[in-house]
Amino acid sequence: MAEIEVPSGEELEELKGKKFTRKVALMTALYAVFLAITSLGGNNAAKEMLLVQQQASDQWSYYQAKDIRDHMDRGQKLKLEAELLERKGAMKPEVRERFETLLKDLEKEENRYQKEIKEIKARARELEKERDRYRSQDAYFDFGEVCLQIAIVLASVAILSTSLTLFLFSTLAATLGCLLSINGFLLLVRIPLLG
Image (cartoon, rainbow, N blue to C red; front, side):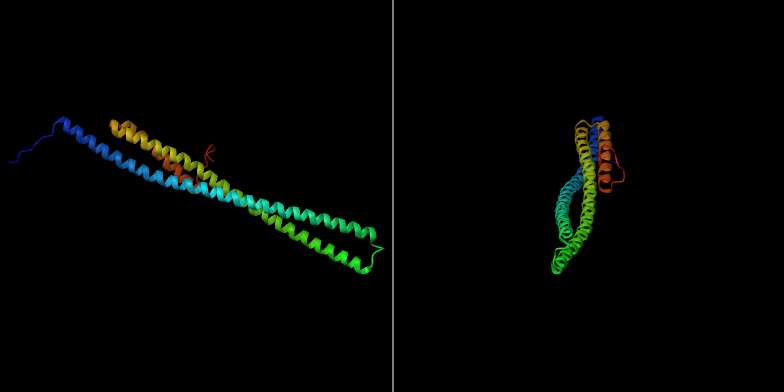
């Protein structure tokens, strides 16, 4: 019959520690994967937020340019109307006709500018809403990253100290970080202080 060697208490404790260490190390690797995904989501949200903010600023500048042009044309129209009223009787028919044509053209321009201004304003507001959505996403990613980084540190310390308590805290921090990250992508829940 073959001889069976029974491990000593110290050997059993060492094997148990290795199993714990492998389990925690595997979980730490998973935390790092989630951290990378969260970091990527946060970087993309921040970039998009800045890009959309620039587009919104451009739209508002365009809005202002159109609005200024509209005011200038309106002033010109008022000036022509006043001049026409003042000199109507003394004007030659072809001059009066030219004034009236100019007034009609300015009125068409005014209507066109008013329509364009409304469209530009609506587009700028849409871009601002999009910017705000990216800003909200970014906040969830930021806090998700922090929680995942804390989870990795706690898991590392848990390996060194073979502490189940620290490992449980790291799991809790990682779970919170993952939930914040998922919420960053989907914005299912709005947490008041985050966005």
